Length: 237
Image 1 (cartoon, rainbow, N blue to C red):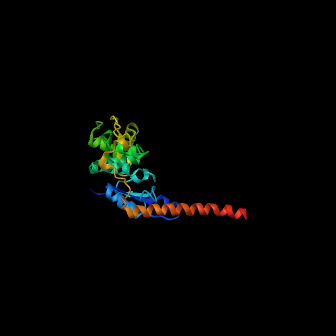
Image 2 (image 1 turned 60 degrees about the vertical axis):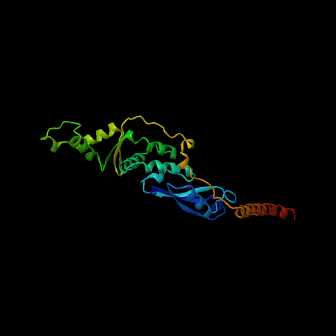
């Protein structure tokens, strides 16, 4: 399955220590890919447990503008699988709707939007009110205009009125509007993610690796306690 978008996964603990350690994860992904990445950036569930996302990129235009740094890896993966089920025309419609700002508040919204694209009409390549007017009059014949009147017809004015009535939006890829269809919330939360789309898991450590990890945590804790005692001991002198 080809990648739709990618995220730069960063070790939060090391970042707080002043080190930027991370790698790119392409979605959809597998549990094995996540575990291998986490191990490489030092997030093993013992020494370091938390991650955040530094940046997004991908082929779905505008998608990464609506994703945050603390998104769930499982939820992102589910979104990627849902988008993978769409054909190219639906991807373009999805891009147009998110450009309009509808259903972009969360990954939850984006997943539901991708499953309700039949609630929108999309005309690729229509980028102006005049072009919209011509499509509605010349191709869709929404108004009967005599042939001898067409050369003088104000397509732009008609397209402007149509856009206002539609509540439509000109996106980079074309014209889109909500057609009034019933929007059904199919995704309610993490419990709706299929097991095969749940991929977040810490790396599996062997006994030696586990012992080394716990010892590093103990040493780090002892060092922090020592640092906290030093200022107090200096004040006592």
